[in-house]
Image (cartoon, rainbow, N blue to C red; front, side):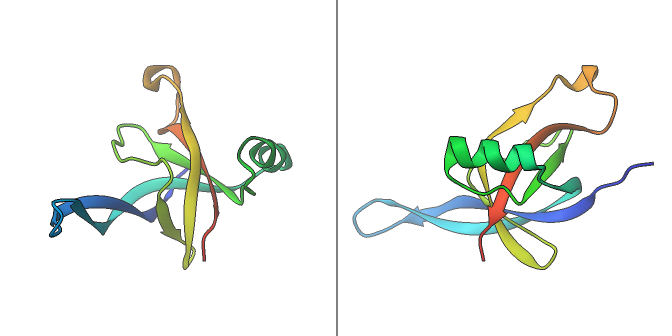
Length: 110
């Protein structure tokens, strides 16, 4: 049986306003369980470089039913911090036999 790992995902949450009435955001980390972490293929790397100017290091398989925002956000796994890029590709949940229906590419963030 295939099983993913837990990754941490950063989400920006509005925590108030500043003295100019502009919103102030804080980074909040959430654990997301059962995420597949796979090395990016050579095709993924070439395509990402051409489309986004970024080098894809890994592709994350996002579990079905997940409602987090995976667009241009930080994630932590393997003891490092990464950043997602591009719009996650998504399939129809009922048409995909396994537990994952989205994927998103990440680059090393430092």
